[in-house]
Image (cartoon, rainbow, N blue to C red; front, side):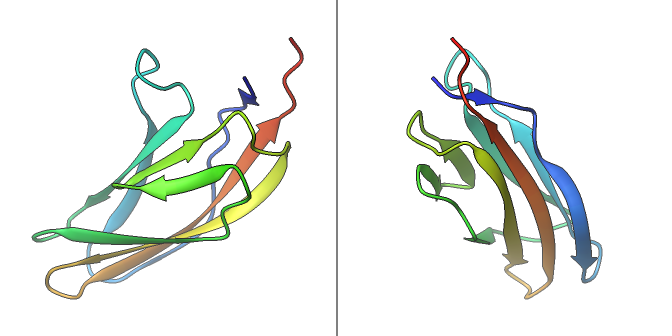
Length: 102
């Protein structure tokens, strides 16, 4: 299992309206390497678009999943959220994956 350094840091954030993209580690009992996205201030359903994911990291159902096959390194990931009213927010996060030492 890869060691994930709590590694989501905001590099930059552009907001339209009052939207704010959040990211939080999912319940570790279910999957220690999963991070859920949220969008505060959104009206209606939110669609997320994610760019820059490295091999071994995928995105589905508003969740970033890091597999045991993800290569160690530091990656910048762009997240964009759009609500039903067309409001959007963008956030660039840094994901750091450390090599497993065990």
